[in-house]
Image (cartoon, rainbow, N blue to C red; front, side, top):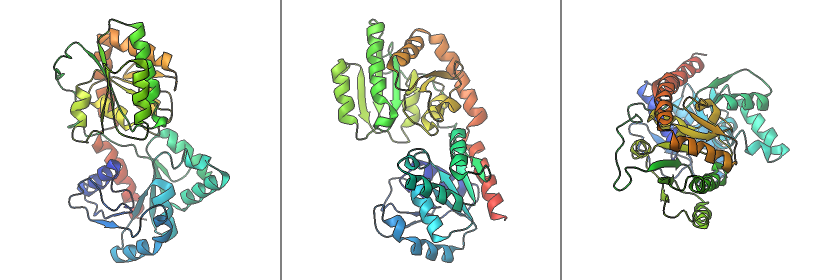
Length: 354
């Protein structure tokens, strides 16, 4: 497996496939990682930075000869996928992750051509959402050898729980958004929507927690201050994977206001915890929110439309309860960790038997 060892998605796939009996060995360009890979061995590429993906093909070939793996699984087309293709690894399964097939190819004709060339070198391509499957088909100019392999959720960890009352907030309508603090995730729109909600429902007692870290922190803090929302809006920083379930369980709704989104892991985690989700109509988000059933959708970057959704959720507790229950059922039926790992297991088996 060629991937970033710092990614929680890498950890979940590596540990999940290991539990299914696959002897996984992770090769990464990261110098270290904060995640526990347990019995999965981790090897590191020499050097740092983007140049590593150009200069480490010999290291990959050497390890490939030593391990003689039945399959190489690379994550992210334009770095680890490029490296695996450069090293001539076969059979090659390439998992595309989002920006590598949406944003990167749009930079120039050369970026487009390069991405298409990498995709065509893979024996099979895995995509986490249906919209990504369609995008890959367009980039490859071929409908073959693409599998839909969404991220799954641990339903034992992410589950509904009795609302844990927080001191002084028992009667508060609690809104949460867990995102990297980047422009593409639309958190400025969420803050604007919260300001409109306060104006529309001045007597509503509500709170907004924006959890995460990133380059937009100062700009978002300034926006909160500009709207005078310091008393209701908190930015507590990054959240550990271990703390995520309880954080969601303590909320009334989750909001995913992205400008672009390839899948929507945060949506299915919130739904698994039995809370409804408001999301923007972009990328893979409409695939994981059933409009009017498990949550509500609004046009991206439209704070006024978001406020309408927030107002409805704030004033209709029965609707929140109904959507939360439906969201849990939806994830159980479609996005359980076991079901999604089974899809990847089937793909591994198919490629190693060729």
